[in-house]
Each structure stands twice: as C-alpha cells, then as structure tokens.
Image 1: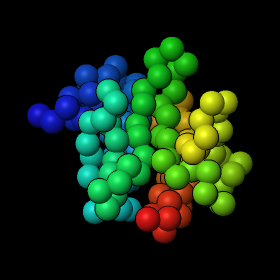
Image 2 (image 1 turned 45 degrees about the horizontal axis):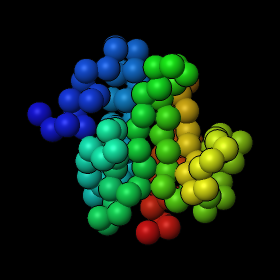
Image 3 (image 1 turned 30 degrees about the horizontal axis):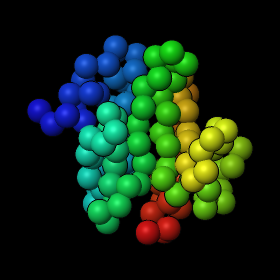
Image 4 (image 1 turned 90 degrees about the horizontal axis):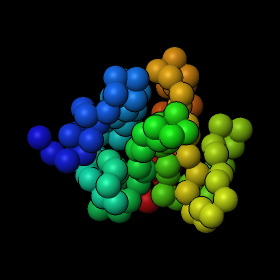
Length: 116
C-alpha cells in the first residue's frame, strides 16, 4: 500500500469517508492527476506539479482540500477558504460527507486544471 493510501485508510472512519469521496471525485474529474505522499499528507500532482493536498485536521475537525494555485482561482470564492499565513493556497473544507458539494468541488478542480 502506498503511503498516501495508508494515510487515508488509517484515518478514523469519519475522516476516511470524506477523504475517499474527495479522491473519487478527483479521479473522475482529473484522471491524469497522481496521488503522492508529500509533507506528511496525500498530495495530488498534475503535470508533475503540486495540484492539491488532502489534510484531515483532527484538532479542527475538518478535511482541508488545499489548492496549490488557489489564489488564482476566480470562481466559488464563497466556498474557498483563505487562512492567514498562506500566500498561494485556498482550500475547500468539509466537516462531513454530507457537506461535500460535488458540483462545487468538481468545478474548482476543473478551474484549477486550467492554471497548469
């Protein structure tokens, strides 16, 4: 088992379900992206460049999907989160499987793809 898969499978079920759903959407939307394990978390790469990471934040109780070129994204700004200290990444955050808006996630992935 690859380290990224190991990270996902070993999460508590609440986070694992969210992560698996996001991975499924990513694979359907951008099948050319590869799931790597960088900086201690799963990270999708597209055209050999960092695309987005998946981080289960147990302390803050959400899954963060951070887009490497997030500050260049123009759509769905009402869904994208900007944290202090991050100068390039914007993220989508999910607290439950039900909170995942697949349409928004898919559209953000497709918009981010155009930046590469």
